[in-house]
Image (cartoon, rainbow, N blue to C red; front, side, top):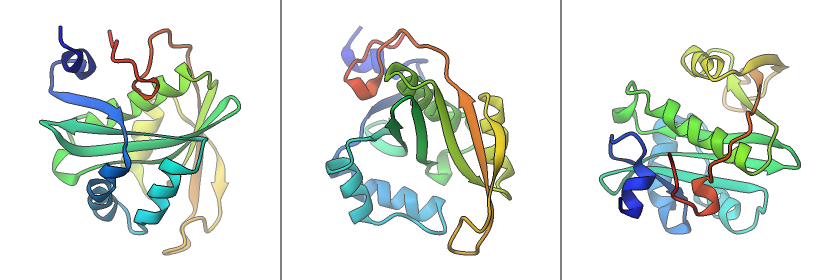
Length: 174
């Protein structure tokens, strides 16, 4: 098996790898499509070059970035900063695969729990998070600056993962 094949996982052609600064233009396309308040190029550049807590990955199909996810790994807690797919690739359970990889990475890095905020009106995302073991832990009033919408705070415990993660440079995905 080649290195690329071992990263792909379930034979669907998806490849997970570390995000690089050169990926930012593609990431910005996904950002603008997925979020009403997209991050800027400067924000991503800072995350990749200056924030030692930040861990970001991309999901590729046929060499094209179709999704990405990021988190901050602090002490034993992971905080999801963003997770998004191009709209054309939604509805295939690939967002779930991306979240699985992010959670696996967090566990590998020694994180014991993972948290995120999600719009209270985003039922699709909330359902995915619940499926992955997240539970509600409160709200942040007026969290989103575009419309002052509340955010639901969700947490999940992370199981211990023995396999290495893509964010640590390994491609040994069983």
